Length: 472
Image (cartoon, rainbow, N blue to C red; front, side, top):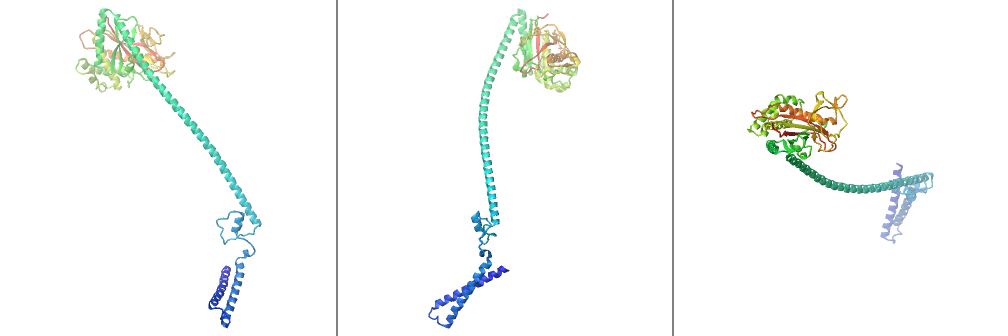
């Protein structure tokens, strides 16, 4: 309320001064020649009195309304301009609450100095952090450049390795082709030598037998028959030797040991594809009879063998891989046709294994331990060409000493060969040829097997056919 009265007093004083000025102005317009009139003199006196009253009111009111100015204090904005930057909330009408040089001003100056020092410290820390970031960035860039250089080097090495690998693959392919060609030439040379060593009558029988047996390939779709020199039984020279191999393994057909007819699981000696595990017993019963019926029509020339085999898995009523049953049907067809030729024949089986996953042992059934086989006549030979065997059979116990109730990689070759030979033997008497002409004898026997060191892994069983040329 005091402030309101002070403002009204100032307005009244200002009004007095304004009215005095107005009177003087009007008097000036009428001229000074009437100044001697009483009325005119009264107006001049009134104007002077109002001017004096107004000026006095202003003189008194202004110090009263601004007491701090009266005692010589200065606005806060002026103090801040002298001692530091003005704050954003300072206005022209605000004034400092303390006079210059007082303890409060000094405290504020100390606070400002402290704040400035803190800001400088923050700036210095920020600059230090920025410098560290620059150093880190520089290090990261150097590492990135080094990485890019290493990556380029690795890429160059990879490209170089790829080029070398490509060159090696070309060389290996060439070497493999050369080896296959050499094996093929060796086989043909041995066959020519075998034929040349025969007597004239035997040579004619050899040629005729070879033509008839190789002609069986026309009916076969899974098994392929080829003439070969190996394996040999020592002392038996008048023989014609053939290999029966699965067409899927044809890439190895020129190797001395052959391509193979059955491929076993790496650690197993059981017949691959025999899900029930009693194939030998089944072939002596219904499954064997079904095989006989299946091959009877092709033997009579009424239907192709492939067509006759198509319904075999359902007819056999035995849980086995259809491929296995089809291979056995084609084997039965071959066996019957060979027997009808009237010559004595021997199917030999040799098993292989690799030693890459040893040593290990697995349980061995009692009925699998005893194996009769033809021993290798040169057991110290490490070459693939060591394929000559003794003519007599030798009984051997398979398994790991001393109890022989387990087997390892060393036992797999003979165990696999015995498994295949037992299955083939069960088929030999299943359906004897219905013919009035003389038929030859057929048997299936085991050749001592081998653990094949190194690669490629070999877990196959090879089946060969040796047909005697000496007929009684």
